[in-house]
Every structure is written in C-alpha cells, then in structure tokens.
Image 1 (cartoon, rainbow, N blue to C red):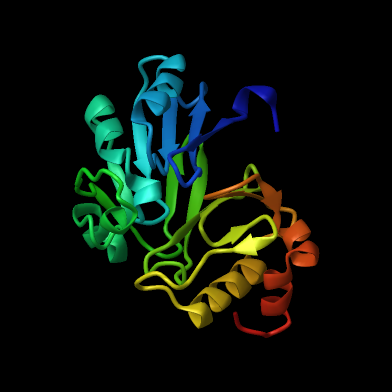
Image 2: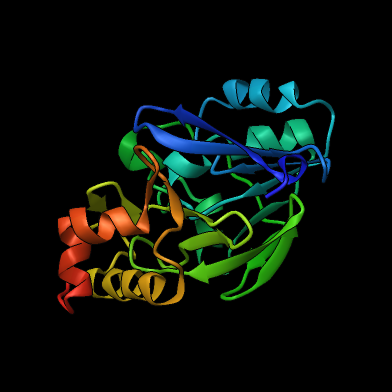
Length: 222
C-alpha cells in the first residue's frame, strides 16, 4: 500500500477495566475515526486534537459501559455522528443495561445518529469498512473489517488467548461460538485483529494458540 494512503491507528487503554479505544486517522481522507471511547474523554480528545480540526466520527462495537463511557463527552466536543447496532441502542440510555450501575461507573446517556447493519459497507478514512454482526457477547456486537488494510476491530469477540464473556445480560455462549466461526469462515486468517481489551493479534495466531477459538473451530461450543 502506498505510504500516503496508510491510516494511523492509535490504541488508548482507558478506564478501570482497561478497554481499548482506537483513534484512526487518515491525512489523505482528512478524517478521524474514534472507536469505543469507553472512558477518559480528555485523554481521547488529546489524541484527536493532535491531528488537527478535522471531521470526527464515532463507531461503537457494542454498548457496554467500558466501551461507551466517554462517548457522550467526545460527541459533545466534536459534534461527531455516533454509530452502533440497533440492538445496542437501549444500552446508550440505561446505566443498568450498559453495566454502569453494576460496576459503579459514571454514566452519561447519548443517542445514536445511525445504526450499523450486518454486511453493510461504510466508507471511512479512504477505505470501505464491512460491518459483521457478531452477537454473543452482546446482542448487537459488531466487528469492523477493512480489506484494504487487512485489519479488523472486533470489540469483545476475540482477544489474545481468550474470547468475550457471555455471562452478562444478552450474552450467549452458543451464539458467540457461531459468530467466531463466521469470522473465520469469511475473513482472511492473516487479518490483524484489534480487540476491545489487550494487545492486537491475528486470526491466524488465535486459530492455533487460543484454546477457546480452537475448541470452537473444532465444532465445539463454549
């Protein structure tokens, strides 16, 4: 890929649950994308401001508080449109459903501007992003895939050596197993995965080193 067309991906680990917020920037497209601003909005805005006064969009992989807790503040500071799957919309306005009350975390409601749909392709940062609906950790979890960069931002679906928990409201171990099999069936295994927690990895690495993924790809269920 030519140097001028590359995007920059900055990982910010925020909040008491150490969730990953991603700030993606493309100079060529003159756009900034913030994925999962879960906490510490001042820290996130410091990153955004480093790239100058450019249009900002907020994408949310799902609606748990550790992924949305700073979204209202970032949206207010940037006037950015907010995207989430419609199944998660109620979590944006409820401190109970989002888990904020259970975890004792501050909560500020917000409203989505747009809803993701499965297999929807959205232009952003000069490339086309395909949205995969991957429920199981939550009903409206989304994985965002850029074929041009061979990267995916997967929320709490797959982590390095682990997978998303399914014991929260709306979680389902059978469904997340189906979602993980779908990702491996539909995406190249060299895809680099940026998860909701922990370091980035690749689908290939997790296929051989992640015991939960190995179980699922062997037609087991969590």
